[in-house]
Length: 135
Ligand code: THU
Image (spheres, rainbow, N blue to C red):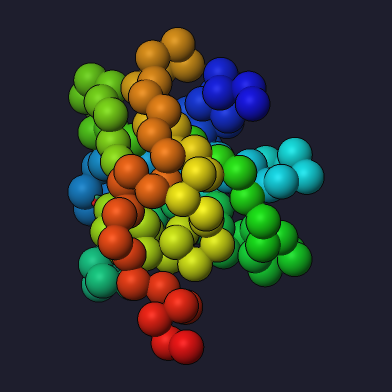
């Protein structure tokens, strides 16, 4: 898996962030099992709570186009005029990713194209609540 390519796609998606209220820009790049990349950015609302995170934008784009199997997501987030940082997916995004991600899917937390951390999804959402609980 080409982490650098996915990291670059997340950084590129971050440039499209619509975040006039928080000034915190996030981009995500989601890799399907078939090798397609879907990107997303955070999109904020003046009413605040309708705001959508970058990870869910990418996921909703992909699922609404028929994709349900993924191998990785890269996330890049930082304040608009601030230093790059490792920005981890929020709890709501972890829950939503868990709908489609296996524990061994990869989560790449991107500071720069050459500086990122790689985690398994199971590491960042252990003991999650999921479909199996409803059986
Ligand atoms: N945000 C994301 O897009 N992804 C995350 O995982 C964390 C938070 C966005 C939501 C909001 O637009 C801004 O970052 C500040 O919370």
